[in-house]
Image (cartoon, helix red, strand yellow):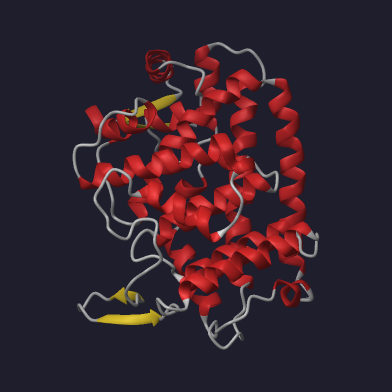
Length: 348
């Protein structure tokens, strides 16, 4: 069975692109800490939006969807799920909330990961919830002509419990001994987790929840305010391509995790920069129309009322609607479509 040698990874000569991403994330994390001290209350409103987006996007990547209204009811109001999709969404919401509230008291061990997986399925009857896989699984692609191709064969069920144990032990050792930069150790852990593919179902969603947990435990809190899952969902192809490039040779221990490390670091950095953009809008006291004007200047091409709401969490929907109406009347924005299909774009 494969060994998990983080120390060997630590001896790699990282290229300037990867090191540049690490340095840029530390710089942005430092700025975020400063921003949070300045305007904690306004920024707290970003948290609710990020939880909703993360829950929606991470499930949507796996084809688990419901309406925008139901997502908000399930996540913000914690209403009772009505069907299988909503049960899976509610489970994800619960795990994400536990991570947000208690990340510092959730050790990275096999048993805790199994417990989180059990909570993921707590609204449905799933006999293997909280247990490692009972049958061999495969990572495959379905092509337009209908044929299915196996891209990667994860570990067998009997190898999985021990592998998950060893992965956690090795990660904890290198983090505890400060042998490897956390921003490199975290993507490597997630990459190995996905190669093990420890569960019959829920591996992708668990990997994204664990990404958030590991980042929080290492002091990187951007996922609390900006949804990393939504960023991954926007560029699913890049995510799968980076994972495929890194998986090649994994069983033989000749794999190269660098493509996946760079992909995940780029996603984290992009989220930090989004946070900075949103902070700029709430930084000084502005009228609602000035806030919406500034938010619209951050958008390129068409955007919706919901896009503005994400950038202006301190404003009510009615304030945003009123401001958009005035900006259309002033000739600064143009409006297209009606009802749910309404969108806006800037007039230069």
